[in-house]
Length: 88
Image (cartoon, rainbow, N blue to C red; front, side):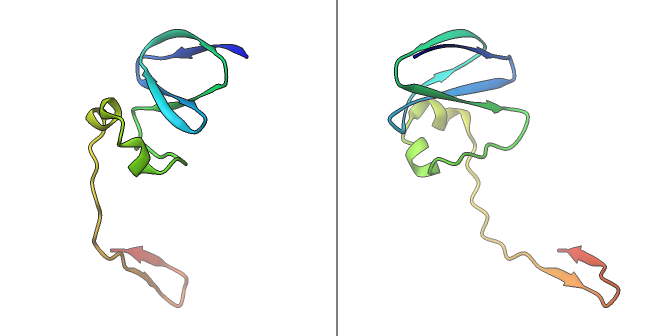
């Protein structure tokens, strides 16, 4: 299979083959050959992937692009009788 992928300046493309991250695409137009898939991510927003983050972070290039923050706080949400809610 052959496909053309266009990555904008504020995007990154993660190239996978058989579920493994093999390349990271920056701005430009790329021809993708063979049994590969490309997931395009907008760098203006938080990085959210369906792929396990520990597997993705094995790639040094991606690891250098991301700031990983572990949240260990407890979130609390209060509901009143009127249905109003407030998150703390």
